[in-house]
Image (cartoon, rainbow, N blue to C red):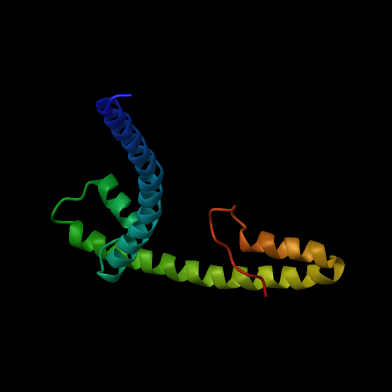
Length: 135
């Protein structure tokens, strides 16, 4: 084998490995960072007093003019605050209900079944979305 051919095979192999690494690592990184960045942006918008996703969609849908925009933004902002409060209250009440279900089920389940229930309660929406640990 000639030196040029060896060099060509080496560079071709190196390019293949680099492409493989890029193809595997970059999409995963972008997917992972995209979820976190989206949440940060939403919370930053809420903290800065700008409307969140609901308000953005509503204001785009009704195509605000400059005269009515401030009043409607205030209304939307108040509505988002109420929705957030309800979400927090419902989450707390839901946690209490799910905890009581776990306590009611515990005497009727074997230790292995209860462990499966605990694992199920940690991932109630599927493997990719976090849940909570039952009390």
